[in-house]
Amino acid sequence: AVQKLFELVPVTMAKKIERANVQQAFVFDTVCRLMARLTAPTMLCVGSYEDTASMGLRKMGYQVEEIDPMINYSLQEFSTKPTTKKASYDIIFSTSVIEHDPDDESFMKCIESLLSPGGYAVITCDYKDGWKRGDPKPGVDARLYTKHDLEKRIPGYIPSCRLVDIPNWDCPHPDFKYLGKYQYAFATFVIQKVR
Image (cartoon, rainbow, N blue to C red):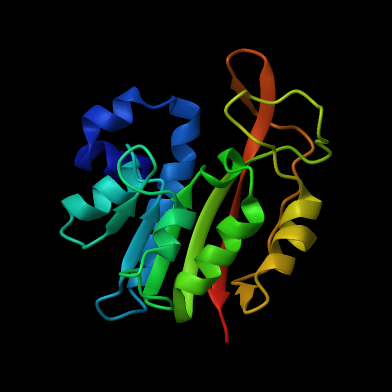
């Protein structure tokens, strides 16, 4: 998937942190797999500014609606627009955005409200199990996610959604280092709206 993204959007991929490209590749690959189950899916990319998964999908000819506060709207702003149709997106994806939002509860509730019945959300986040408020984190992050967040807290905000499979968020040795001092990993969170 990383190789395919380099073929599709080489300039933007080259600007990214090489070790972090796994997130974009996961999102791209997962969205492609989910699209195979659907006929002409409606898709929304949350945090689309230089999102190579969205750029790659668009290069392949797929329609992706894109929102990003750098370009147009935050998810919460978009969700409240009178022109935004609730329960209308078959696939919503967001690569390493949720950890920047101080209100991840409203972030997840907006995603739940925008997903169509049976729709999927593909989310990645900065992750370090055991992280607590006050622990070191990149300045751009509101938090780092933990296993408890992904197993208990976040699902509690979205009662109509379920994980698509049995996750494994065990990561005793985070392998990503940001700015030479922040050690963490990336986690994925894939859900389906079941009611």
